[in-house]
Structure formats: structure tokens, C-alpha cells
Amino acid sequence: MAKVRGKAGTGAAAAAAAATRTKWRSGVQERIYGRRLLDALRATRDGAAGGGGGAPPQPRAVKAAADSALALTARGQSRWSRAILLAGAASSRRRVLVKAGGKIRRGGGGNSCRRPQARAAAAAAKAAAAASSAGEPPMLKEKKVKERLRVLGRLVPGCRKLPAPALLEETADYVAALEMQVKAMRALADALAAAQLSSSTPQQAEAAADETEMER
Image: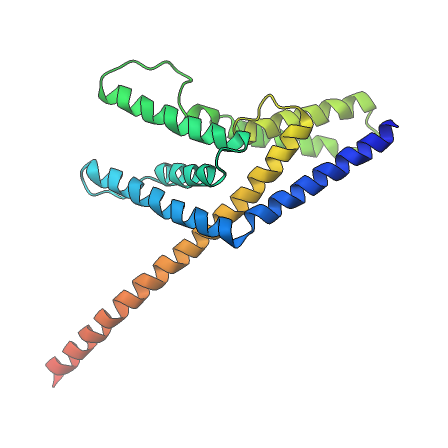
């Protein structure tokens, strides 16, 4: 009976993961995210320009804008999207307090949840290398599985204390959303590159024409 339940749970998880990938691969979701990404990047650019100096936004600010747009596209229906939105709100409150001269307790910002990711990735690599050895006792294997789940919970925002089934479901949704994010950002980068090329071509042609006139 337990085996039947286990197979049913596995099948349900696989079906949920497939539905998640389909949702994030739909053209509607990509268009919605593309619009929100543009709005977030414009706001980030305007904020950087408002700070003086005309410097472009920092890569961290661009990443935060892209993640916020992704969480908004998810409409807060997942734990990872709610965690990103809450982290962004906490970061905004922290900036306001800093400008007002207020004191901030450590650990309240949005970046604190990302600090362990490098250590978590290293731990995951060590766990994968150790798991390759054969003939391990069941207790050791179970311990390594728990360690991998713990590392995975650190990598997915807001999912540190989830049980394994919920963690795997959130991870599938998060990975599918990140894949769509990468696709949308690549398309945006290609469009910007094409626009710059098309705008520079007439200028180059005009400069070449002027040089020809001067030689004559």
C-alpha cells in the first residue's frame, strides 16, 4: 500500500512539474514578463540617473529588477515569488531608513538571503562527489539526501524550511521561471543590439558620404 502511495505521489509531482514548465513556456507569460521587465529596467535606470553622475545601473540592481518582475509575473502564488517581493520591500525600507539616518538591524535586508548561495553551491558539489561512491550504508545515503535538500532549500528563495515534496515542487516552478527569464533577457539584449546597429548604420553611411565629398 505504501508503495502504491509512493508511486501516486511521484506521478502527481511529475504531473505538477510538467504543468509548471508548460505554464512558464507559454507565450502569454513571456509577453507579460517582458513588459514588466522593461518597466522594472526603466525604473532602475531612472533611479540610477536620479542619483547623479549619469552612471548606468549596477548589475546587482538590474538583477534585482529582473527578479522582481519575475516574482510579479508569478503573482505571488509561490513561496519563492513572495520571498523575492518581501525581500525587495525590505530593501526599499532599508534605503529609506539610511537616507533618514535611521538604524537598521542586521539580517533584515533582501541580500542576506543570497549570501549563503556560494557556500551552498560548494556544499552541493561536495555532496554530489561524495554520493558517487558505491556501497554506502542506507543511513549515510539518507543523511546525504537530507543535506542535498537542505542546500536546495537555501538556493530557492523562501524555501529553507519546507518539507521535501513542497520543496521539489517550488524548485521545479522556480527553475522553469528562471529559464523563461533568461530567454526573455536574451531576446531583449538581441533587440537592443539590433536597434543600436540600425541607428548607427545611417550615421556611418552619412559620414562615408561626407568623406567622399571632401575627397572630391
